[in-house]
Length: 494
Image 1 (spheres, one colour):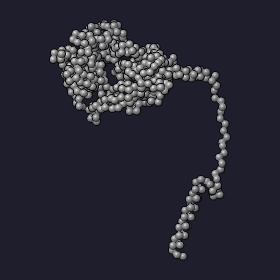
Image 2 (tube, one colour):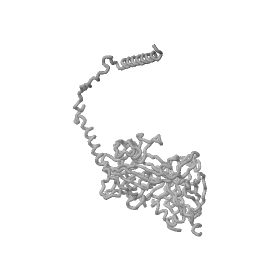
Image 3 (tube, rainbow, N blue to C red):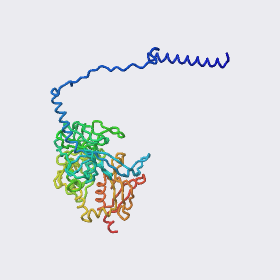
Image 4 (cartoon, rainbow, N blue to C red):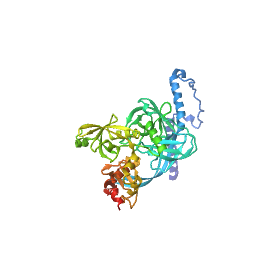
Protein backbone atom coordinates (compact mmCIF):
# COMPACT_ATOMS: atom_id res chain seq x y z
CA UNK A 1 0.00 0.00 0.00
CA UNK A 2 1.36 3.36 -0.96
CA UNK A 3 2.18 5.97 1.66
CA UNK A 4 -0.44 8.38 0.30
CA UNK A 5 -3.19 5.77 0.62
CA UNK A 6 -2.11 4.96 4.18
CA UNK A 7 -2.25 8.67 5.01
CA UNK A 8 -5.80 8.88 3.59
CA UNK A 9 -7.07 5.95 5.70
CA UNK A 10 -5.38 7.41 8.76
CA UNK A 11 -7.28 10.65 8.31
CA UNK A 12 -10.54 8.73 7.88
CA UNK A 13 -9.86 6.82 11.10
CA UNK A 14 -9.11 10.01 13.02
CA UNK A 15 -12.34 11.63 11.74
CA UNK A 16 -14.46 8.59 12.70
CA UNK A 17 -12.86 8.44 16.14
CA UNK A 18 -13.60 12.14 16.71
CA UNK A 19 -17.23 11.68 15.55
CA UNK A 20 -17.77 8.79 17.94
CA UNK A 21 -16.26 10.69 20.87
CA UNK A 22 -18.41 13.80 20.21
CA UNK A 23 -21.55 11.67 19.82
CA UNK A 24 -20.91 9.90 23.10
CA UNK A 25 -20.36 13.19 24.89
CA UNK A 26 -23.59 14.57 23.43
CA UNK A 27 -25.55 11.52 24.51
CA UNK A 28 -24.07 11.74 28.00
CA UNK A 29 -24.98 15.39 28.39
CA UNK A 30 -28.50 15.24 26.95
CA UNK A 31 -29.47 11.77 28.09
CA UNK A 32 -30.53 10.89 24.53
CA UNK A 33 -30.25 7.34 23.22
CA UNK A 34 -28.73 6.38 19.91
CA UNK A 35 -32.10 5.13 18.80
CA UNK A 36 -33.68 8.56 19.17
CA UNK A 37 -31.24 10.28 16.83
CA UNK A 38 -32.78 11.62 13.68
CA UNK A 39 -36.32 11.42 15.04
CA UNK A 40 -38.55 14.49 15.40
CA UNK A 41 -38.91 15.91 18.93
CA UNK A 42 -41.97 14.90 20.87
CA UNK A 43 -45.07 17.10 20.47
CA UNK A 44 -45.50 19.56 23.42
CA UNK A 45 -48.21 18.50 25.82
CA UNK A 46 -49.96 21.47 27.55
CA UNK A 47 -49.78 21.49 31.34
CA UNK A 48 -52.94 21.14 33.32
CA UNK A 49 -53.57 24.11 35.62
CA UNK A 50 -56.36 25.65 37.67
CA UNK A 51 -56.30 29.33 38.68
CA UNK A 52 -58.36 30.88 41.43
CA UNK A 53 -61.39 32.82 40.27
CA UNK A 54 -62.13 34.39 43.65
CA UNK A 55 -60.27 37.05 45.60
CA UNK A 56 -59.10 35.97 49.06
CA UNK A 57 -61.40 38.59 50.58
CA UNK A 58 -64.67 40.19 49.61
CA UNK A 59 -64.83 43.99 49.47
CA UNK A 60 -67.25 43.83 52.38
CA UNK A 61 -64.48 42.19 54.41
CA UNK A 62 -62.24 45.25 53.97
CA UNK A 63 -64.88 47.91 53.82
CA UNK A 64 -62.76 50.67 55.35
CA UNK A 65 -59.78 49.94 53.08
CA UNK A 66 -62.09 49.79 50.10
CA UNK A 67 -63.54 53.18 50.90
CA UNK A 68 -60.06 54.57 51.47
CA UNK A 69 -58.91 53.16 48.14
CA UNK A 70 -61.85 54.73 46.30
CA UNK A 71 -61.34 58.06 48.05
CA UNK A 72 -57.63 58.11 47.19
CA UNK A 73 -58.56 57.56 43.55
CA UNK A 74 -61.30 60.19 43.72
CA UNK A 75 -58.86 62.70 45.22
CA UNK A 76 -56.27 61.99 42.53
CA UNK A 77 -58.83 62.46 39.74
CA UNK A 78 -59.84 65.82 41.23
CA UNK A 79 -56.31 67.17 41.72
CA UNK A 80 -54.27 65.95 38.74
CA UNK A 81 -56.02 68.08 36.06
CA UNK A 82 -54.74 71.24 37.79
CA UNK A 83 -51.11 70.12 37.91
CA UNK A 84 -48.78 70.95 35.00
CA UNK A 85 -45.36 69.85 33.81
CA UNK A 86 -42.88 72.63 33.01
CA UNK A 87 -40.05 72.48 30.46
CA UNK A 88 -37.56 75.33 30.22
CA UNK A 89 -34.64 76.29 27.99
CA UNK A 90 -32.17 79.14 27.82
CA UNK A 91 -28.56 80.27 27.81
CA UNK A 92 -26.94 80.80 31.17
CA UNK A 93 -23.65 82.40 32.12
CA UNK A 94 -22.39 80.21 34.91
CA UNK A 95 -19.52 80.73 37.30
CA UNK A 96 -17.39 77.61 37.58
CA UNK A 97 -14.29 76.74 39.57
CA UNK A 98 -11.06 75.48 38.06
CA UNK A 99 -8.95 72.73 39.75
CA UNK A 100 -7.33 75.43 41.93
CA UNK A 101 -10.70 76.72 43.13
CA UNK A 102 -10.59 79.95 41.13
CA UNK A 103 -13.94 81.05 39.58
CA UNK A 104 -14.41 81.73 35.89
CA UNK A 105 -17.45 82.46 33.69
CA UNK A 106 -18.79 80.03 31.09
CA UNK A 107 -21.84 80.25 28.80
CA UNK A 108 -23.99 77.13 28.75
CA UNK A 109 -27.14 76.00 26.97
CA UNK A 110 -29.57 74.91 29.67
CA UNK A 111 -32.72 72.84 29.79
CA UNK A 112 -34.80 72.10 32.83
CA UNK A 113 -37.94 70.39 34.04
CA UNK A 114 -40.25 71.02 36.91
CA UNK A 115 -43.84 71.08 38.03
CA UNK A 116 -46.48 73.69 38.72
CA UNK A 117 -50.07 74.07 39.78
CA UNK A 118 -52.85 76.17 38.25
CA UNK A 119 -54.23 78.56 40.87
CA UNK A 120 -56.60 80.83 38.86
CA UNK A 121 -59.22 80.33 36.18
CA UNK A 122 -57.21 82.76 34.03
CA UNK A 123 -54.30 80.32 33.89
CA UNK A 124 -51.86 81.58 36.50
CA UNK A 125 -49.45 78.87 37.60
CA UNK A 126 -47.38 78.75 40.79
CA UNK A 127 -44.00 77.02 40.65
CA UNK A 128 -40.55 77.41 42.22
CA UNK A 129 -38.39 80.36 41.22
CA UNK A 130 -35.40 78.06 40.79
CA UNK A 131 -37.31 76.07 38.14
CA UNK A 132 -37.44 79.04 35.74
CA UNK A 133 -34.44 81.09 36.93
CA UNK A 134 -32.43 82.42 33.99
CA UNK A 135 -34.54 80.58 31.42
CA UNK A 136 -35.88 82.38 28.35
CA UNK A 137 -38.35 79.76 27.12
CA UNK A 138 -41.04 78.26 29.33
CA UNK A 139 -43.43 75.58 28.11
CA UNK A 140 -46.33 74.23 30.17
CA UNK A 141 -47.89 70.83 29.49
CA UNK A 142 -51.41 70.26 30.77
CA UNK A 143 -53.02 67.07 32.05
CA UNK A 144 -54.71 66.46 28.68
CA UNK A 145 -51.38 66.51 26.83
CA UNK A 146 -51.76 69.99 25.36
CA UNK A 147 -48.66 72.18 25.56
CA UNK A 148 -48.56 75.99 25.66
CA UNK A 149 -45.99 78.74 26.11
CA UNK A 150 -46.02 80.55 29.45
CA UNK A 151 -44.71 83.94 30.53
CA UNK A 152 -43.26 85.00 33.87
CA UNK A 153 -45.54 87.38 35.78
CA UNK A 154 -43.38 87.78 38.88
CA UNK A 155 -41.11 85.98 41.31
CA UNK A 156 -40.23 85.93 44.98
CA UNK A 157 -36.59 84.90 45.34
CA UNK A 158 -36.66 84.83 49.14
CA UNK A 159 -39.57 82.40 49.18
CA UNK A 160 -38.50 80.59 45.97
CA UNK A 161 -41.84 81.18 44.27
CA UNK A 162 -42.58 82.19 40.68
CA UNK A 163 -45.92 83.01 39.06
CA UNK A 164 -46.45 82.14 35.38
CA UNK A 165 -49.38 82.66 33.04
CA UNK A 166 -50.36 80.14 30.38
CA UNK A 167 -50.63 81.74 26.94
CA UNK A 168 -53.92 80.09 26.02
CA UNK A 169 -57.61 80.96 26.41
CA UNK A 170 -59.26 79.70 29.60
CA UNK A 171 -61.01 79.04 31.72
CA UNK A 172 -58.68 76.66 33.51
CA UNK A 173 -59.38 74.46 36.53
CA UNK A 174 -57.49 75.86 39.56
CA UNK A 175 -56.79 74.26 42.90
CA UNK A 176 -57.80 76.08 46.06
CA UNK A 177 -55.15 77.35 48.44
CA UNK A 178 -55.62 75.70 51.83
CA UNK A 179 -54.84 77.13 55.26
CA UNK A 180 -51.37 75.85 56.17
CA UNK A 181 -51.73 77.10 59.74
CA UNK A 182 -54.19 74.23 60.28
CA UNK A 183 -51.73 71.57 59.09
CA UNK A 184 -50.75 69.08 61.80
CA UNK A 185 -47.80 66.75 62.09
CA UNK A 186 -48.94 63.25 61.11
CA UNK A 187 -51.74 64.27 58.76
CA UNK A 188 -51.96 62.58 55.34
CA UNK A 189 -50.80 64.56 52.31
CA UNK A 190 -50.23 63.88 48.60
CA UNK A 191 -47.42 65.20 46.41
CA UNK A 192 -48.24 65.66 42.72
CA UNK A 193 -45.70 66.50 40.05
CA UNK A 194 -43.43 65.56 37.17
CA UNK A 195 -40.50 63.59 38.67
CA UNK A 196 -37.60 62.97 36.27
CA UNK A 197 -39.79 64.27 33.44
CA UNK A 198 -41.94 61.13 33.54
CA UNK A 199 -45.22 63.06 33.67
CA UNK A 200 -47.95 63.35 36.25
CA UNK A 201 -47.19 61.28 39.34
CA UNK A 202 -48.98 61.08 42.68
CA UNK A 203 -47.33 59.95 45.91
CA UNK A 204 -48.76 59.76 49.40
CA UNK A 205 -47.26 60.37 52.83
CA UNK A 206 -47.64 62.42 55.97
CA UNK A 207 -46.41 65.71 57.37
CA UNK A 208 -43.31 64.55 59.22
CA UNK A 209 -42.42 67.88 60.84
CA UNK A 210 -43.04 71.63 60.68
CA UNK A 211 -40.80 74.69 60.84
CA UNK A 212 -37.86 72.98 59.16
CA UNK A 213 -34.98 75.11 57.81
CA UNK A 214 -32.78 73.94 54.93
CA UNK A 215 -30.72 77.11 54.49
CA UNK A 216 -30.21 80.56 56.00
CA UNK A 217 -32.84 81.85 53.56
CA UNK A 218 -35.40 79.02 53.60
CA UNK A 219 -36.94 78.18 56.93
CA UNK A 220 -40.34 77.31 58.39
CA UNK A 221 -40.91 74.58 55.79
CA UNK A 222 -43.05 71.47 56.03
CA UNK A 223 -41.15 68.18 56.03
CA UNK A 224 -42.93 65.23 54.40
CA UNK A 225 -42.20 61.60 53.59
CA UNK A 226 -44.38 61.72 50.46
CA UNK A 227 -41.96 60.79 47.66
CA UNK A 228 -40.49 63.94 46.09
CA UNK A 229 -37.82 63.62 43.40
CA UNK A 230 -36.02 65.92 40.93
CA UNK A 231 -38.74 67.35 38.68
CA UNK A 232 -41.30 67.56 41.50
CA UNK A 233 -40.13 71.10 42.35
CA UNK A 234 -43.03 73.53 42.10
CA UNK A 235 -45.73 70.88 42.35
CA UNK A 236 -48.41 71.00 45.04
CA UNK A 237 -48.64 69.19 48.34
CA UNK A 238 -52.37 68.69 48.96
CA UNK A 239 -54.52 67.60 51.87
CA UNK A 240 -57.41 65.12 51.86
CA UNK A 241 -59.72 67.77 50.38
CA UNK A 242 -57.38 68.43 47.47
CA UNK A 243 -56.43 71.85 48.81
CA UNK A 244 -52.89 73.12 48.37
CA UNK A 245 -51.13 73.13 51.74
CA UNK A 246 -47.61 73.48 50.35
CA UNK A 247 -45.46 73.90 47.25
CA UNK A 248 -42.75 71.24 47.00
CA UNK A 249 -39.34 72.89 46.95
CA UNK A 250 -36.50 70.53 47.90
CA UNK A 251 -35.42 67.08 49.02
CA UNK A 252 -32.71 65.83 51.32
CA UNK A 253 -30.24 63.51 49.59
CA UNK A 254 -26.77 62.58 50.83
CA UNK A 255 -25.68 61.92 47.23
CA UNK A 256 -25.58 65.39 45.67
CA UNK A 257 -24.40 64.06 42.29
CA UNK A 258 -27.34 61.65 42.01
CA UNK A 259 -30.15 63.03 44.15
CA UNK A 260 -33.20 60.92 44.78
CA UNK A 261 -35.94 60.34 47.31
CA UNK A 262 -34.70 59.49 50.80
CA UNK A 263 -37.97 59.93 52.67
CA UNK A 264 -37.29 63.58 53.47
CA UNK A 265 -38.88 66.28 51.32
CA UNK A 266 -39.68 69.93 52.00
CA UNK A 267 -42.59 72.18 51.03
CA UNK A 268 -43.30 75.90 51.37
CA UNK A 269 -46.47 76.45 53.48
CA UNK A 270 -49.44 77.56 51.40
CA UNK A 271 -50.17 80.67 53.50
CA UNK A 272 -46.73 82.06 52.63
CA UNK A 273 -47.22 81.14 48.97
CA UNK A 274 -50.71 82.66 48.85
CA UNK A 275 -49.53 85.95 50.35
CA UNK A 276 -46.70 86.27 47.84
CA UNK A 277 -48.98 85.18 44.96
CA UNK A 278 -51.57 87.87 45.67
CA UNK A 279 -48.88 90.55 46.01
CA UNK A 280 -47.34 89.58 42.67
CA UNK A 281 -50.74 89.55 40.91
CA UNK A 282 -51.92 92.82 42.49
CA UNK A 283 -48.67 94.82 42.68
CA UNK A 284 -46.31 93.08 40.27
CA UNK A 285 -43.83 92.13 42.99
CA UNK A 286 -43.68 90.53 46.44
CA UNK A 287 -43.94 93.02 49.27
CA UNK A 288 -41.56 92.20 52.10
CA UNK A 289 -41.60 93.97 55.41
CA UNK A 290 -38.65 96.27 56.02
CA UNK A 291 -36.92 97.33 59.23
CA UNK A 292 -33.73 98.79 57.77
CA UNK A 293 -31.35 96.68 59.79
CA UNK A 294 -28.52 94.29 58.95
CA UNK A 295 -28.33 91.21 61.15
CA UNK A 296 -25.71 88.59 61.96
CA UNK A 297 -26.04 85.20 63.71
CA UNK A 298 -24.87 84.80 67.29
CA UNK A 299 -21.71 82.73 67.55
CA UNK A 300 -18.79 82.38 69.99
CA UNK A 301 -16.89 85.26 68.40
CA UNK A 302 -19.89 87.59 68.67
CA UNK A 303 -20.58 86.58 72.27
CA UNK A 304 -17.00 87.35 73.28
CA UNK A 305 -16.91 90.63 71.38
CA UNK A 306 -20.04 92.15 72.94
CA UNK A 307 -20.15 90.29 76.26
CA UNK A 308 -23.37 88.44 75.45
CA UNK A 309 -23.80 85.07 77.16
CA UNK A 310 -26.88 83.65 75.40
CA UNK A 311 -27.01 81.50 72.26
CA UNK A 312 -30.24 83.01 70.92
CA UNK A 313 -30.94 86.28 69.12
CA UNK A 314 -29.80 88.22 66.06
CA UNK A 315 -26.96 90.74 66.25
CA UNK A 316 -27.60 94.19 64.73
CA UNK A 317 -24.53 95.10 62.65
CA UNK A 318 -25.99 98.10 60.82
CA UNK A 319 -29.02 100.41 61.09
CA UNK A 320 -30.16 102.37 58.03
CA UNK A 321 -30.74 106.06 58.60
CA UNK A 322 -34.41 107.13 58.73
CA UNK A 323 -35.53 103.49 58.68
CA UNK A 324 -38.13 101.88 60.98
CA UNK A 325 -35.26 100.33 62.93
CA UNK A 326 -33.72 103.76 63.46
CA UNK A 327 -37.10 105.13 64.54
CA UNK A 328 -37.36 102.33 67.10
CA UNK A 329 -33.99 103.28 68.56
CA UNK A 330 -32.11 100.16 67.50
CA UNK A 331 -28.34 100.58 67.49
CA UNK A 332 -25.36 98.72 66.11
CA UNK A 333 -24.36 96.04 68.62
CA UNK A 334 -27.90 95.41 69.88
CA UNK A 335 -29.22 91.85 69.93
CA UNK A 336 -32.86 91.26 68.96
CA UNK A 337 -34.02 88.55 71.35
CA UNK A 338 -37.78 88.53 70.72
CA UNK A 339 -40.01 89.63 67.85
CA UNK A 340 -43.64 90.19 68.92
CA UNK A 341 -43.10 88.05 72.05
CA UNK A 342 -41.63 85.15 70.04
CA UNK A 343 -38.07 84.05 70.78
CA UNK A 344 -35.56 84.79 68.00
CA UNK A 345 -32.89 82.12 67.50
CA UNK A 346 -31.39 83.41 64.22
CA UNK A 347 -31.64 86.29 61.69
CA UNK A 348 -33.77 84.15 59.37
CA UNK A 349 -36.53 84.12 61.99
CA UNK A 350 -36.63 87.92 61.95
CA UNK A 351 -36.82 87.89 58.13
CA UNK A 352 -39.65 85.34 58.18
CA UNK A 353 -41.54 87.31 60.83
CA UNK A 354 -41.23 90.46 58.72
CA UNK A 355 -42.53 88.61 55.66
CA UNK A 356 -45.69 87.69 57.55
CA UNK A 357 -46.25 91.11 59.09
CA UNK A 358 -48.64 93.50 57.37
CA UNK A 359 -47.21 96.84 56.27
CA UNK A 360 -47.85 99.56 58.84
CA UNK A 361 -48.36 97.10 61.68
CA UNK A 362 -46.54 97.84 64.93
CA UNK A 363 -44.00 95.29 66.09
CA UNK A 364 -42.40 94.89 69.51
CA UNK A 365 -38.69 94.11 69.65
CA UNK A 366 -37.22 92.84 72.90
CA UNK A 367 -33.57 93.83 72.64
CA UNK A 368 -30.39 93.22 74.62
CA UNK A 369 -28.01 96.18 74.85
CA UNK A 370 -24.84 96.18 76.97
CA UNK A 371 -26.31 93.84 79.56
CA UNK A 372 -29.77 95.46 79.73
CA UNK A 373 -33.07 94.32 78.17
CA UNK A 374 -35.04 96.99 76.28
CA UNK A 375 -38.49 96.92 74.70
CA UNK A 376 -38.59 98.86 71.42
CA UNK A 377 -41.53 99.51 69.14
CA UNK A 378 -41.79 100.46 65.48
CA UNK A 379 -43.96 99.99 62.39
CA UNK A 380 -43.04 97.73 59.50
CA UNK A 381 -42.54 99.49 56.15
CA UNK A 382 -42.39 98.33 52.53
CA UNK A 383 -38.84 97.38 51.59
CA UNK A 384 -38.93 99.38 48.35
CA UNK A 385 -40.85 102.36 49.70
CA UNK A 386 -38.39 102.62 52.58
CA UNK A 387 -35.49 102.69 50.17
CA UNK A 388 -37.27 105.43 48.24
CA UNK A 389 -37.67 107.44 51.44
CA UNK A 390 -33.93 107.22 52.05
CA UNK A 391 -33.17 108.56 48.58
CA UNK A 392 -35.85 111.23 48.50
CA UNK A 393 -33.58 113.87 50.02
CA UNK A 394 -31.09 113.61 47.14
CA UNK A 395 -32.73 111.82 44.20
CA UNK A 396 -35.23 109.11 43.41
CA UNK A 397 -34.21 105.49 43.52
CA UNK A 398 -34.16 105.36 39.73
CA UNK A 399 -31.70 108.23 39.66
CA UNK A 400 -29.50 106.47 42.20
CA UNK A 401 -29.48 103.34 40.06
CA UNK A 402 -28.69 105.43 36.98
CA UNK A 403 -25.78 107.07 38.77
CA UNK A 404 -24.53 103.69 39.92
CA UNK A 405 -24.48 102.48 36.31
CA UNK A 406 -24.31 98.81 37.17
CA UNK A 407 -26.45 95.74 36.51
CA UNK A 408 -25.98 92.49 38.41
CA UNK A 409 -27.74 89.16 38.64
CA UNK A 410 -28.22 86.67 41.44
CA UNK A 411 -26.39 83.36 41.23
CA UNK A 412 -28.42 80.39 40.09
CA UNK A 413 -28.88 77.20 42.09
CA UNK A 414 -25.99 75.36 40.42
CA UNK A 415 -23.58 78.23 41.05
CA UNK A 416 -24.63 78.48 44.67
CA UNK A 417 -24.32 74.72 45.08
CA UNK A 418 -20.71 74.90 43.87
CA UNK A 419 -19.86 77.07 46.88
CA UNK A 420 -20.00 80.48 45.19
CA UNK A 421 -21.85 83.41 46.76
CA UNK A 422 -22.61 86.99 45.79
CA UNK A 423 -23.83 88.51 42.50
CA UNK A 424 -22.40 88.54 38.98
CA UNK A 425 -21.91 91.79 37.03
CA UNK A 426 -23.82 91.71 33.72
CA UNK A 427 -23.49 95.34 32.55
CA UNK A 428 -21.30 98.35 33.39
CA UNK A 429 -21.91 101.97 32.36
CA UNK A 430 -18.47 103.48 31.58
CA UNK A 431 -19.79 106.86 32.82
CA UNK A 432 -21.36 105.56 36.05
CA UNK A 433 -20.07 105.50 39.60
CA UNK A 434 -19.25 101.80 39.21
CA UNK A 435 -17.21 102.26 36.00
CA UNK A 436 -14.20 100.60 37.65
CA UNK A 437 -16.05 97.29 37.77
CA UNK A 438 -15.91 94.86 34.86
CA UNK A 439 -18.29 92.44 33.15
CA UNK A 440 -18.40 89.05 34.91
CA UNK A 441 -16.89 90.38 38.16
CA UNK A 442 -18.24 88.37 41.10
CA UNK A 443 -19.23 90.81 43.87
CA UNK A 444 -19.12 89.03 47.22
CA UNK A 445 -19.40 91.85 49.79
CA UNK A 446 -20.38 95.49 50.32
CA UNK A 447 -18.50 97.14 53.20
CA UNK A 448 -17.44 93.62 54.24
CA UNK A 449 -21.05 92.48 54.56
CA UNK A 450 -21.76 89.39 52.46
CA UNK A 451 -24.21 89.72 49.56
CA UNK A 452 -27.24 87.40 49.38
CA UNK A 453 -28.69 88.26 45.96
CA UNK A 454 -29.17 91.12 43.48
CA UNK A 455 -31.86 92.87 45.53
CA UNK A 456 -29.68 92.67 48.62
CA UNK A 457 -26.73 94.14 46.70
CA UNK A 458 -28.69 97.12 45.35
CA UNK A 459 -30.20 97.85 48.74
CA UNK A 460 -26.87 97.71 50.57
CA UNK A 461 -24.87 99.50 47.89
CA UNK A 462 -27.27 102.38 47.28
CA UNK A 463 -27.98 102.94 50.98
CA UNK A 464 -24.23 103.08 51.63
CA UNK A 465 -23.34 105.29 48.62
CA UNK A 466 -25.95 107.85 49.65
CA UNK A 467 -23.85 108.70 52.69
CA UNK A 468 -20.28 107.48 52.17
CA UNK A 469 -17.68 105.95 49.89
CA UNK A 470 -18.42 102.26 49.61
CA UNK A 471 -16.06 99.30 49.70
CA UNK A 472 -16.80 96.56 47.17
CA UNK A 473 -15.09 93.17 47.48
CA UNK A 474 -15.10 91.10 44.31
CA UNK A 475 -13.39 88.27 42.47
CA UNK A 476 -11.89 89.11 39.07
CA UNK A 477 -9.77 86.78 36.96
CA UNK A 478 -9.65 84.42 39.93
CA UNK A 479 -8.21 87.08 42.25
CA UNK A 480 -9.79 89.00 45.13
CA UNK A 481 -10.03 92.71 44.26
CA UNK A 482 -11.10 95.63 46.48
CA UNK A 483 -12.81 98.57 44.74
CA UNK A 484 -14.01 101.78 46.40
CA UNK A 485 -17.07 103.43 44.85
CA UNK A 486 -17.50 107.17 45.51
CA UNK A 487 -20.52 108.42 47.43
CA UNK A 488 -23.38 109.70 45.28
CA UNK A 489 -22.98 113.23 46.61
CA UNK A 490 -19.45 113.48 45.20
CA UNK A 491 -20.38 111.61 42.03
CA UNK A 492 -23.23 114.01 41.22
CA UNK A 493 -20.91 117.02 41.37
CA UNK A 494 -18.78 115.76 38.49
